[in-house]
Image (cartoon, rainbow, N blue to C red; front, side, top):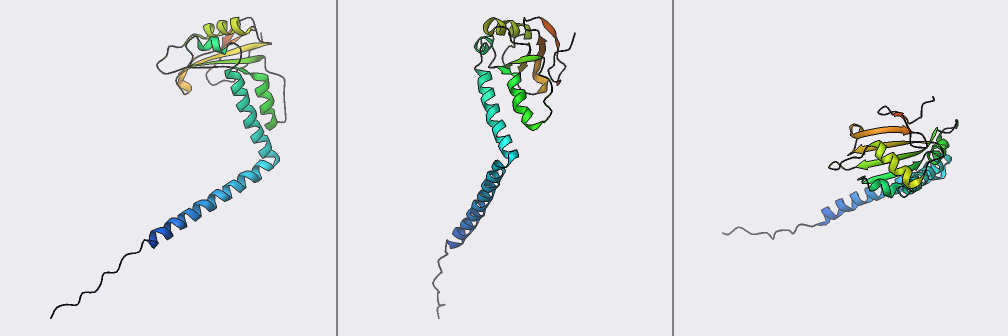
Length: 181
């Protein structure tokens, strides 16, 4: 007597589809909740200030990268060059701090960033190149030259009078402020 062979039941792929639909549903729910949370935050006074500041800072950085003198500073070998308007940056940040305080004693922050393999110029070279191209700022200005990324990459950071006279070095990590004489 021969054993009776039963037909082999075909496996269904429906289990995978159910798992995929479940995971997709959870992901969709998370995205909807996050979008709703961001929307609610953006409608609050704090959210409006934060999103407004982000937009204004983006505009400020774009202006700083295209400011007079930055093309010439890039010509010194800087892969990134900016001349940031410190007064504008202060106004943007004042949205989060009620006490405005007096304006900074310098009006521009000139930044030169050189790639890891590049040769950085001196702060004096950047300052003189910037002044020759853009003219003197309203008040003093700071120059920062970095190579690569990170705190250890600072080559120099110096404060100058509007005519280019060196005031002094900035301590690493310090807030730029021209010392009083």
